[in-house]
Image 1 (cartoon, one colour):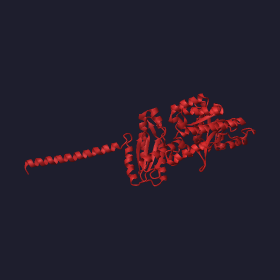
Image 2 (cartoon, helix red, strand yellow; image 1 turned 45 degrees about the vertical axis):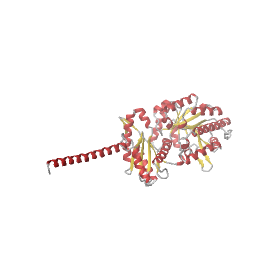
Image 3 (cartoon, one colour; image 1 turned 60 degrees about the vertical axis):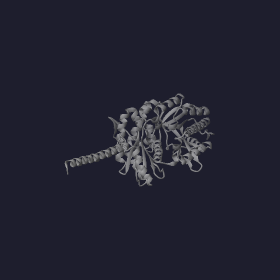
Length: 470
């Protein structure tokens, strides 16, 4: 081989080596770009694109993956109070918990904000998915989260959707898991499987909404009334109106059977108007007969907007009811979702003379800052603290502290879920102002409510049993 040939061969070899190296570098770059395009830069989890590329092949070949959609509760408060850098720190910590608790067969992705998805390729059953979801929530509840030196309590709500019965594309599964997740958030259930009957966008949900419009026109809706008594149990102070639906084929439906669908539509405003007007008409009829009590009505978080003022004004005018004897109960969820809007609406209702109560206090994530700014009149302690008040010293300590705090803020304290004489006696000893629960009476139809009051000696024998006309 001549020198020229050898040099040429060397050039060719070097060129080939360089070409191979270049191809390897290009492939490595492509892999990096591929991974970056499918990775959430904050948490290192897969992103929405990665979820699509994992799920669509499974669905295309007839697989039945399960999807868990997680949304953190009250996360907006972290960003608003501590800043977005602190919020990012929390999201990274949550991602670590999800990796550790979702299971080896699951793929965890972050869809954006504080929303995460867990894809389980081959769940053995719906029960297995629910166990996985509860394992994730249990991991969050253990705690240990922090933003700098500030310790934080992080909780979440999870909606479950399964390929096949709940949808055939990833888009359908995401939409239906989202419906279930918001239902879990509203009901504080933690985890819920998608239910078409509770989805206003499904055929079942649309049918239920149509039936409810008819129900309001045909007097299928009814109100039951639960008494509120003084702390010593000696005086009837008022009633809380609770809506029921006497469905023509399904029997008596509880609010949980239809309110989740209604709250996602404008029909909630019509339902609020119906409940408020019907409750005050009944209370006015009782008052004419000699039974003088306050009337409490629950207000959905969706209804806590400026439009509520007009509904209240109309009901007060038509029934000639004293606004000081109307109590509107709002949930912690309503306060957290829109603190500024809640403050504005509550302030206007208070100016009108209507009393405001925070319902289920202690079950949600209301901060004391929100409570201070709301200027409410009553605090209703959630039943979860009352149920085991006598047997759990921690619950006793919490209730005692809440009563003392509320009284220092000038608030009336109402305990919900009083079911035993021991709980009633303990709450009385702690200075609780009002009691409500099955120990005294379950929610009763109007006629039975008056009969109960008379039998308990809490009203005069001359009171007639009246039911207000619609």
